[in-house]
Amino acid sequence: MLASILFAASLAAAPADADLRAVARLKGEPQTVAAAGLTKADAPILTIENGSAFDPQSPLLRLVIVGAPDDDGRNAHAVVEAVRWFKTRAPGSVRKRWAVSVLPSAAFDAGDTAQLERWITFQAPDVLVEIGPVGGPARSAAFTTETTTAGDAAEAIARLFSTTPRRSALHDAMTARVGRAPLDIARLLARRYPETPALSYIPSVAWTSTLRLARALNDPSLTAKVREQASSLVKDGRLPFGNRIQLTAVAGTMVFAELGGGDLPHALEGARLAAARNDRGLAEYGQGWTDDMFMTSAILARAGSLPEHRDDLTALSRLLVDYAGRLQRPDGVFMHATDGPFAWGRGNGFAALGLMEALTALPQSHPDRAKLLAIFTRQMAGVAAQQSPDGSWRQVIDEPGAYREETATAMLLSAMARGIRLGWIGRQYLPVVERAWRALAAHVREDGTLVDVCTGTGAGPTRRYYLDRQAITGADDRGGAMALLASMEMMDLVAVRRPSSRPRGASSSAPRTVR
Image 1 (cartoon, one colour):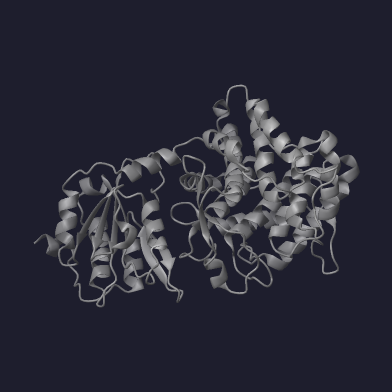
Image 2: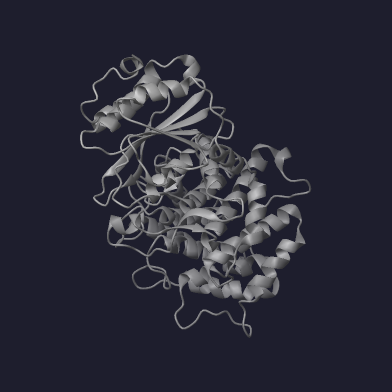
């Protein structure tokens, strides 16, 4: 009887994509069509998701329903019809207690369990209902799992809604993780990263952010840590660029600009190298990728604050305008390279951070400022439209089935937060930033290790090259540095919105220019 009430439609065939999207469009949550992954044949594994997975204020219990792939599609149809019932005929008391996300058909390639595990974990279920045995990593002691058949699904879900399960250990853990303040996460990451000091942009992002935190908290121990680690790079008064100078190493000199004093010559040497361009108009020591936009900006924006180095700002602004002309799409999103014309997540982060650094340094009167601001605002609009349901950004920005990646989320969040704070973009972006912050916090574990950090990536000839880049989970200097930067930007944004929220005795933690 309950089955006929819940799922009035026939279970004879799998729902077409149009049916799934039609159910998603019905009033109420869940309503966002996304994907939990991709098959090797590039078929998206579609989901219908709600946006509250990382909302620490939500009192709702979380139900996740996953259909096992089958020959006639009955399982997938049962999942979609469960959503239809929930949105149209479920008692109000049920809808007030539960949030639902579903994966109608877990049709992952054989042996591919990582995508399913990742999606379920970050939905933070209290209860997982498998329609058909999904198997693999879906079962966990951290939440309740029930398995049923398509024919019995209605009865099983009805019984579930008539009870009041406890919140799961996973739900509680995720709520606590995303509820941490930016200051708490910044302190955690500043103490841990970088684990491997080197002349590279990665440690320098961590170091410069740590110096910001040290100034905000008036904590000389953090400054001492940075000085000790950065000084270890200097050998006989020289920096270890090696026989082949790389722009990633040149960007590492930004820390010496922040330290100033006797370290200033190292920063100015980095600025000289960053400003050089070849006969193709590209950064001499770069690759022509969006990476170059940040690597050059990181040092030139800082060096350009010196009166005798104002030309560095003009060199930087013109390089960024030229790169945007090559790599920015009409929708504002950046492709990684002309020979890698795909919207790589961290590649968009590099473009956004490069523009952020330049706009922070450029005087209002600079002739190129309006061009850079237009490039920046187009990008922010473009990436905001591609944000995933949980607030993160994906490994390939415009591919719903790509994994939701930590550094892209941190970097785009950082640029957007500073853009709001300094008035480059409007306050309509605040909800985008707030959701991105919760997603990032969910990817920073309690010990400072990270979840789903894309490994180092050059320009690739195919979309699949980017989709298949390894996702690192664990300690990672790159992921830690970018999350630390994002924490500092969120601290400053919160302080501007609620001045009383600044730590006692703290001053603004905005990045310094060269003294």
